[in-house]
Length: 76
Image (cartoon, rainbow, N blue to C red):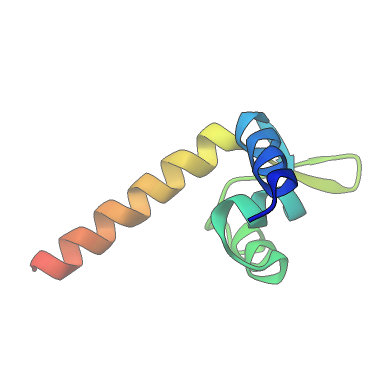
């Protein structure tokens, strides 16, 4: 990994409000998948002008919930 990639990741990590491209990189999913999750109400997002924005704290909570659900299914 180049040193620039580390810097870019840090910038994304430290940003509270992200656009779809940044949020999809943060979550490790494609922008298309993220758009689908947003339109299906799976991930909370809001529009600023005509662009979707996502809060990092909400994404972190969503990931925690997904990990908990996944762990519960494995133990069921």
